[in-house]
Length: 498
Image (cartoon, rainbow, N blue to C red; front, side, top):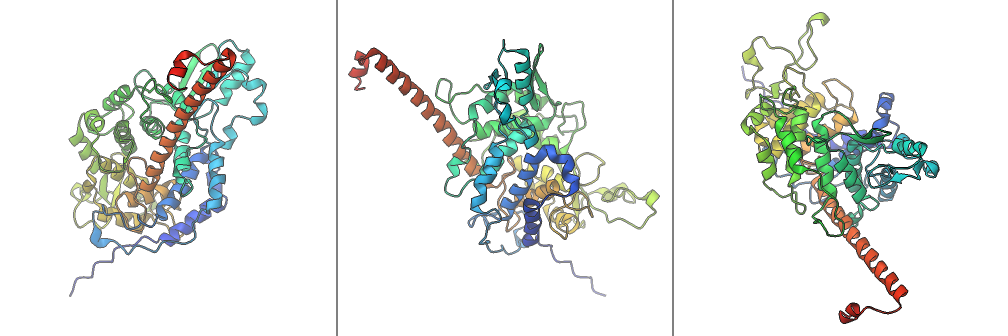
């Protein structure tokens, strides 16, 4: 009796997934998304980023040479002639994103939280644009009205910047951030940092109280702050045009370092339960603090990353331990059935990785069920640390494509679940960061295609140069006004040929 042949490796049906994302882009989302109305910027990012991953530019479709298993790569599909987002729609979508920018800096997450244009008279008369609050000494009613308008948050701001870069016009990548108020956003960002180095999510000035930083002690906010800083700040030095005070990067690094737990993972503090998503955010935030501003997608070694993690071997062990062999559900009574995708084996010895496991899943915490997105959080965290080889990618890929991919496209949270835009997006980013053929190469620290990171670099440089030009114009204008009032040129100006 001969052994049964090994099943063929699964392939990613790009056309099917594009149909799913086309439906998400062009048709109303299902009713269960109503509870996410306050997160529209995030939903837009999941949809448009996924489309960008599925439709790589011509040169990047076959450039994913970092796949751990090149012998299992499928042929790269031909580039599609008709883009899913037509060029004429991109300006309209960018304008929608820019409409969420708040007068005090940052972006709101939904149109229902925008500053009401019709009320920019009395209620915004005392608005202090640079700080996102009301000026001292204004009328009480005006101050409260202005405070209610500052509804920017960190997540929406990062998603907005990523969307602007993803939607940049071909040939005008430097104009991707046109309309972004760089200075006010960076000042707003600085005010969100607490004394211990951590970041909150939202900022508000309360009457008779002062500044209030809302949001818990969440490692995600640290990552979001570091990402926004890298995308907007640039290399402007103090005293130069375009200079904006920086937040305390050393304080942020110290806060992250203190949040590593006894078993090597990361949490909101060292006394809390570690989580794979927090580990990714801690690693990503540290790596972005000294990431090069130009040619940043090339390999580089982050000194802040390696000095900011107290126990690197412990972190690697903890991340690698998030993998386990996926066991098929057995036919048991409903009362005895475990969670869908985490069944206890007959013995603990069976709950270890081995070369015989066809499907390997990842969880976010010890003794928890698997989830599509944790293949991304774990895999990308390991990639940022330079140890993507610790992820059993062949078996993890099978798990995503055979157990989590849905027949209508997209990925569900658990096996058998319908697809949703969050898990469908991070299912794709996990595949892309590990070098799946036919997908755009994805930057593991910023969760967008590498080509989009290059757009961000150009757009940031254009914003900084624009700030310098505005400063020169102000100086020139003041000089011309002074000359007009004086009626003659000063001797020092004539001497230099002015």
